[in-house]
Length: 458
Image 1: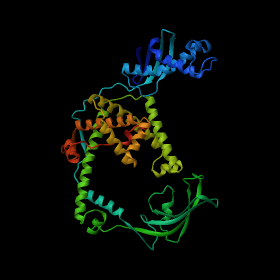
Image 2 (image 1 turned 90 degrees about the vertical axis):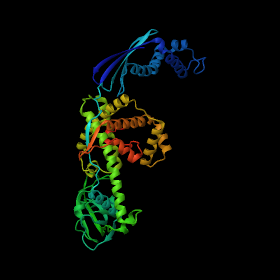
Image 3 (image 1 turned 60 degrees about the vertical axis):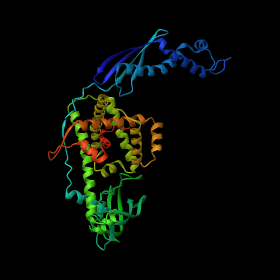
Image 4 (image 1 turned 120 degrees about the vertical axis):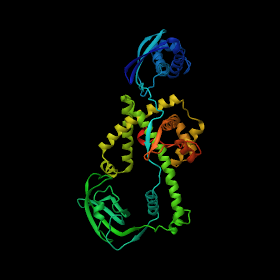
């Protein structure tokens, strides 16, 4: 087999492949067998029709077509390996020449990963947040803990922002009750930001036993998007009461006997979290520093596929929410146009990140051990709330083990970039990542998930 490469652009090539007919022999034998199974010839059992009879009755073209359907995809794969290109899209293949018994020729146009040189990433200077723990950090954690153990107490006053109300809701359009737009005994925190516009404003100042209506646009069901009168009947008003910060609270909320012991534990955990943040920031900023030094052209098909995948995932999220499209975006305080703009930016970065990390993988000769793959599956299974063996089977059944290995090895490449950097914190202190590894994990680098925008959509 002979392969020639023509560069159509920095991200697209055309392969011209010439194949001696002898190399088609295994596919041709398979083609005869397949055709023999499909045709019916008097005097011959299915699958036992000789090759010469098949050619006499149905023509050699039938066999050649079946041969090429089987052989060309395999030959294309061999050609790609021989010329050392990295396809990122499905090829456009055309058989351009058939000399029966001599050779065939076909062309394949395909988008590829562009060629680029990695800059020297040893000693890149980056700055991360300091790991010093402040009293404010401790207070923030304690306040979050108090919120978890807060109690609701009924009050004889109008509802205010932050109070909880129990209410009945119903909706009417032109005086007609909408059956599916009814709910009873709904508990809601005033000011939480309901997708039902106007609800928070209507609830403020209402007392138990009061009823009020307001006009708004329905966000779900058959009448989504239509204006309706929503009637609220407040059943009760409750305020959130936070527990006092004392030894009794420490015993309630933790395994410690005193508030001082609880604070000391929180301080240590916050410090560990800040050390982990330093590692994550070092890796991300080292990667950003590398990306800033190179201009990588992006294959149009890869970028379009990535954006389309994110849009498809968004459509699925909207459908699963049960909300109208407008209400969904309102809930997340964004717009469809803003999300699409984010998709374009994040998709381009995700593809560039993949290209760079794959280069680092090759340069550093990184691989994935069986134990690393097992650890990945166990960790991901815990996040998903499933059994590790179930997830492993799912990955295997859906040909996703390779994707998992790519994710693992790219994480290792990102760690290489972070470790190679010269890291200081915002106070000017040198940050020794290996010392952090030793303190946190006995010398092993903490595992880190890539940021969502850096993950290509499945």
